[in-house]
Image (cartoon, rainbow, N blue to C red; front, top):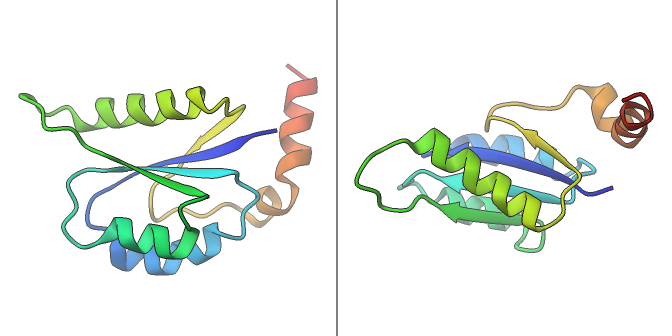
Length: 116
């Protein structure tokens, strides 16, 4: 069961120093990030804490119009789908999973699949 996190960010490096060590303990296969032109080294923090084998940072393309959220969500979802992720969680950089979801994620997802 492949589980991915999709997260947008812009200048969240100080926050990542606190949240990503916690996220690294989650039973998540890959973390997909969308960098909305950060200038604080957020990508470096992501790769230092999560590693390049578990994290991918997609960069915002330069566009004639600015619809960052739509572009971000689509790029991350396309990437996750191309990697055959079965579950995609969308979280903000300041969100954490509840302890029940963290410890029982596979059971919860398996149960939800059986009861569709």
